[in-house]
Length: 327
Image 1 (tube, rainbow, N blue to C red):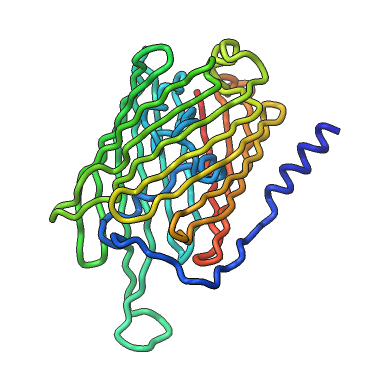
Image 2 (image 1 turned 90 degrees about the vertical axis):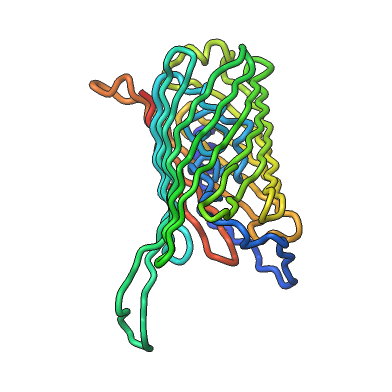
């Protein structure tokens, strides 16, 4: 019965649920469109997306390199992740992250990019005269260090490049974060400042403050779970909530999510985001994850695959597929 119930929950989370369209006007932030490098707003990782965009307080795997760099202290040896985000208008978003522990210090490297192809025409022709790829990317170097048993700090320095057909822009930015893990690692509190920097020419970046809480229930005591190198987080349930406060160009939003692991191998996730001032990004998100250890020659490697579905009545449904490898 337990197995049957787990399967039913996972199947239910895969059902596509599209929010009903709004029929009233949407309030727009006064600063909308006033910052550059909008691709920096992409939320890295399928697992956080399935949780409704709440991860700053949970911050317990390589995905945190895009959310709260202080959480990298949860990496035990080495972790690698990559994500493909299938979005609207044939826009492709990708993220890659790697982190490695060196005694107490953890360092990481990351890539976040968004690209699409546009067509050029001089007349109403069926085929374009030419095409050009536009978009941008940011590469980052991160460091995280524990200040004690419960508190860690971290930061990411980023180099930004943006190509908009005939105009290119470059810039630098930084993320700074703090995370506290309390109550035997059941309660997580995280705060991060993201995208503090500027593009050449003085254009601002989409700087934001993100704060989050997470509470986990464990199948086994946290001290025993931490001894497992390949699966450092053996929680049954995770309840997460984030507040996201853009400082220049958008309205605040609130994010909540729940994750449930079955048999230490299958995860079901559901999340919801609430935007103030009728933010059009309100809505449900769903996700699943599968995790297992390798065998034979891959016995010391842990694999995790995550999927997230984010329906949107305005710009279309989005799908995210990612993997994490721990070794």
